[in-house]
Amino acid sequence: MDLSQVLEIASCTDPGMVRSHNEDSIASDPASGLVVLADGMGGYNAGEVASGMATTVITTEIQQLLAKVKPYDIDPESNKIIAGQLVREQVMKANASIYHAAQSQPQYAGMGTTLVVCLFYDNKALVAHLGDSRLYRMRDGTLKQITRDHSLLQEQIDSGLITAEQAKHAQHKNLVTKALGIDPTVEPEIREYETRPGDIYLLCSDGLCDMVNDDDISMTLEALGANLKLAAQQLVQMANDNGGKDNVSVILVRVQREYPAARGVVGKFLGWLK
Amino acid sequence: MAKLILSMDGLVLKEIPLSKERTTIGRKPHNDIQIDNLAVSGEHAVIVTILNDCFLEDLGSTNGTLVNGNPVKKHFLQNNDVVELGKYRLKFVGEAPVPAATAEKADFEKTMVLRPSAMKAQAEQARAMGAGGAEAARAAAARQVAASAASAATVEREAKPAPAPISATATTPTPIPAQAPAPAPAAPPAAKSPHPLGAIQILSGGNAGKELELAKPLTTLGKPGVQVAVLTRRPQGYFITHVEGANPPVVNGQAIGTAPHALKDHDVVELAGVKMEFFLKG
Image (cartoon, rainbow over all chains, first blue to last red; front, side, top):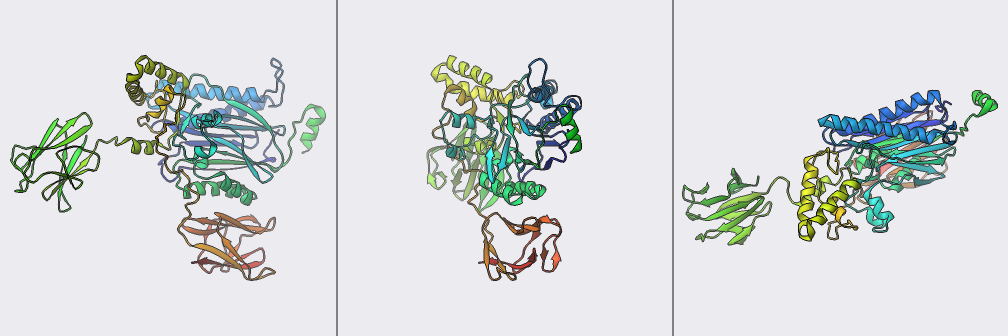
């Protein structure tokens, strides 16, 4: 099912005001309902290589697979909808590619990347993430953070050591506990959410949420929701106006209408009519 | 390597690297740093360098040695200390990886990965070395991390030595260093631009005469679905940008197109059939 008429996608990425190069990578394919954002790390240019590999491998592999199967198909072995497994396997494949490149080429030693992937299908959003790149959802005028960072800070908040308020002033915001390409295998956190028409999804690197507070993000999405491209540019501009200490990347996805899976002959026919 | 910058009356004369264990300062020519001035004693002072630490010692000089304006006999030199011998000043510049606080600040924004498995290994190593050796183990772990990124416990955006707190977290369940200085939050939304506050006054239509202050980072104007523009408040001033509608807003009689347009004091904006004037307050 081609979702390019259902999802409106706008993105913007910028090196920020301090860094000389951009280690973030973004990719999107409205037809497949797929958006990917990665924030690379590692010396010299290795961060760019890692995040670039992540977005490229995941996008192309999932695109190829979606030509053969549908994300809402049932896997005969596990009897589950295959979307989750499909994304998980491609994330693991990207992990292996980055890990092996890092192992075999000295200039890439130790590179890695955070990741957030969103696959839209059947009125749902399947979300996989690793590290501190985030997914937010704007629904009915309220902004909600959907993913929970894999970071030391988040673990401390969860265990009650510090409060969310203290976390804003913490100095170790930059320590992530999970990332792509660091270990031979990785288990991404995968969750699924119902989507509604009018929802706006925001994928961003920490360069945005560290520089712009949630209230300002919310205000921007509410005020400029009518012009998604402008909203994306405005978010990046606000991060830069506040100092732009890190690379900033945002992807915005608006769900324009319902997109139930076309199951069976009738469904396929109705899908074809749309 | 630490170094001294010799100057007189604000003029830099030379830079002297502290490469030897003992660097002597005095008027006589056999000194490492010779200062040919009668206010300086023949053997005036010595700087002893042990690893990264430098100690200044006055050798019983006639006129004494000042550090940051205070007379000293023996002094542990800190970065940017100014040593005065008569009219001459020697500024001490420490080792390149300067005090921890600065280094931490520099690393503040970089994302790194913590690997629990590696941390456990470090923790065990630290425990094995006993309480006294824990500090050394931590330092060693941090060095090891910096040395070999491939097998290391951390990965950074740019290759730089990892700050010690990573390994410190391995040894204790409460990883927040109590005395850690809290750096300023990265995004101070309160730190508003120094730019003066702007406002718009409606000139035509039913709301003519009304005034709207533009205190928020962005304010939308117009009729949704017909014509909407956004006014953004930025450090460089106010900008107006077209958001939706077939036609962009008109400023001083000119349509602005799709790019952001900087607003000047007393610009007249026409939007959705309403005229308004932008002006700066104070």
